[in-house]
Amino acid sequence: MRAVSAAETAATTHPWAVHAEGLQVRAGRHLAVNGLDLTLPTGVHGLLGPNGAGKTTLMRSLATVLTPAGGRLTLLGRSVDNRSDLRPVRRTLGYLPQQFGFYPRFTVREFVGYMAWLKEMPKAGIPAAVQRSIDRVGLTAKADARLKTLSGGMLRRAGIAQAIVNDPQLLLLDEPTVGLDPEQRLDFRELLRDLGTDSCVLVSTHLVEDVVAACTDVIVLDEGRLVWQGTPEGLTTQGDQGDAGDSPAERGYSAVLRRHRAGVAR
Amino acid sequence: MTTTHPTMAQIERYAAGDPGLDEPSVWAIEVHLEDCNDCRARLAGGTTVETRALIERVAMNLDREIAAVPVSAGHSRSWSLLRHRWFVGTLLPWLAMTAAVLASAALLGELWDGQQWLVLLVAPLAPLPGVAVSWHRRADPAWELIAATPAAGLTTLLRRTAAVLAFVIPALALTGARSGASLALMLLPCLAFTAATLLLGTLVGVRRAAIGLIAIWSLVVIAPSVAAARVPVVLETETAGVWALATVLLTVMAVFRVDGFRRISQYD
Image 1: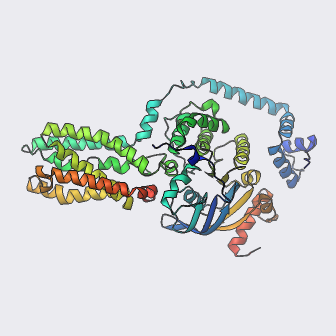
Image 2: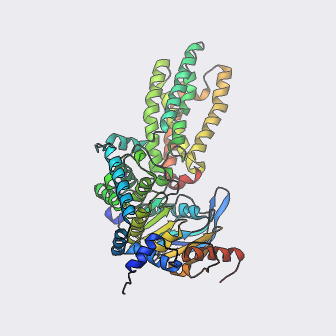
Image 3: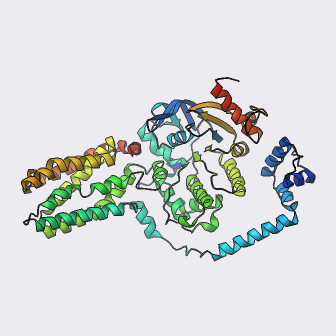
């Protein structure tokens, strides 16, 4: 693998990390993301939406795994249509997919190190970066345990560790809190806030309370389209007692979806 | 900005799940607790004796279970890392199948009236099953993770193809030496087909390219040759130079299509 200079991996400032105009992405034959306009600057963005809303398809296209079927998509100032731009974008990308595959015989350290190597990080900096990311997700004591011996929550944290090992400028986490216990979720929210200070973090989740607690911006997707974007506080004001949900934010989320589906603009 | 902490009484009511505490208050306390270490400590201190005893019991059990798990040696698994950098374990069944097919062709050739050229017919296809699965979502558990890295596409594909060839070439050389077939005609078509698979792979995906080439070669060359019981024209001794030229040309063309590999994941 070719050596990458420090200049190539150095953080670059962009006014927004993600910019999509009329984005269309297919999941099989189905157009799962259909005409999405979205701009995401630095910060932690929570992506909410019911099953089949197109969240995972959107995450996969932002991770450059899926090619857009239409519209324009720019990541970190580079168009994903330009194949030669994909490599530098991918170097500064962190991605935790919903279906998180791994090599069971790898240890946490080997796995995160392997991903750092695939991300073309400077070789000399890999061991320290691996240790730092493992520490940040609280897996220090399990760094040399094989992945097949870890619990679901620990595996998820190993997945987060590999996603953040290269200090990504764009971090995409699809259902990152699945399998985490309440205390780990609180730690994770703290980690998210920390990561969001100098990079763009997009978290796809079903847990509205995670979004409200850790995100600076909320995006609600339905049927492949953006139906609402605003602050967590703004979301809590959308609903009323009649809407489904256990908290003001959940009721706000339900209200946004209900209004969108009824075709009523508030 | 000043922070208002909930009172101890409110925290105790929250911890006890007091239904008299209205929902906005529960919500406010919960959000505050997430950010305030002091109040979390007060909440922990405010739990009942029974709850504290339960937590201690659970902690003791957990400590015991953790202690029972053997500590990893932590030694360097450089071999494991090297192995995964170059290929995935799921290639092994395909490589075993390739070896079995080659051995069968050699054996069949010996049994069938000394028709040693039978092994020549399958030699070009020998690396293709391995190459087809070397970069495919069903063959690599971490496929989606790797697809989002700069190593996705050509880098990973070439590395794993090299691993397949490192296995197939000695196997072909061994089989060729045993059957008396020309070493050049055993190896050059195999390399040409590998390069053709990679080249076509940039257009239709590596798996489809491999399946297509296997099907075409089987229908156009293998089937008529077996039916006629003679060496096909394309594998006669004097064609070695043409195969060498084809290998070079196809490799150069694949190199020029290098950008096509960056999006190769879309076909898999």
